[in-house]
Amino acid sequence: MKICIVGAGAIGGMLGVKLALTGNDVTLILRGANLEAVKANGLTLIEENGNELVAKPIKATSVIAEAGVQDVIILALKAHQVSAVAADLPALMHAGTRVVTMQNGIPWWYFHKIPGELSQPYLGKPVQAVDLDGNIAKHIPIDSVIGSVVYPASEVIRPGVIKVIEGNRFTLGEIDGSDTPSIRAISDAFKAAGFKAPVSNDIRSEIWLKVWGNLSFNPISALTHATLEDICVFPATRELAANMMTEAQNIGAKLGVLFKVSLEKRIAGAQAVGQHKTSMLQDVEAGRQLELQALVGAVIELGQITDTPTPTINAVYALTSLLAKNLADHKATLSIS
Image (cartoon, rainbow, N blue to C red):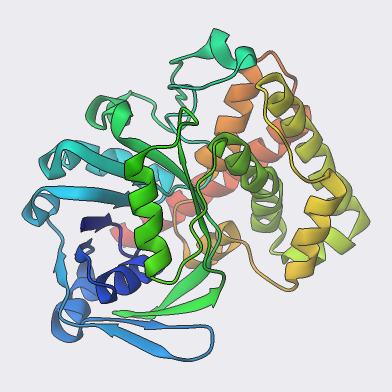
């Protein structure tokens, strides 16, 4: 299977190594020091048990069109990075190419091909928070899209070297809830590479289960510099997270979303992770752009679409938006100086 991984960072690179070592024809799209390191030494993955896997040689480029036509495109970029590459993706596609979207948060395709009676009034509606000008939808054929939920955590510890923190499950799902030969083939390829890759007939509910925590714990941690455990054991922030999650659950209920665990169990699960910094807090500390629109802004937009009040989410979003602006302004100042 010819597989192009667009955004071969911590998650994309993790997939790339194991898929390449099980016989797939993998091309990595990456840049800078990572690209140079991979070209020179291949891509190394350090597993949870310390075992090192090295994919060498492995195709790698910063120019998407150089990858050629692919069977599968794995979009492992962050949500706010997808629009910038969208116009380059058709060069990789034939009639049967599938595009696996691995972004956190509410996806741009959320209302496309959405099943269920409750959602039909919103069928085909764009989610502007993650695709403001429709650029992504314009360049990625909706029939090519496969949704996913990413559960592993990993990090790039130095150029060309990725370390797995925990997890190996990637839930996949056709966005219309169907079961197709192509999604089964991708699931089988993931499984052969050592991943858990269940196929869900309700990928939106799976996405919401992760969004449910991300929309609350991520911005709260970014604002307070607190870990998941800290947020959950401090009564005021635990209540704040619960209020945000309740508002989100009300939105999901209007869209027919099935929340498979209780709110308290979801919070307990976050607490059990312990002294872990959320991805948004890590981005704050590194001065990177925050995934605010996909994780929070899009949820507010779905609230507006379904006429569901989100006062608590709105307040936290406002604060985190100012934080994001200040980070961007500071970065711009540094680049000028």
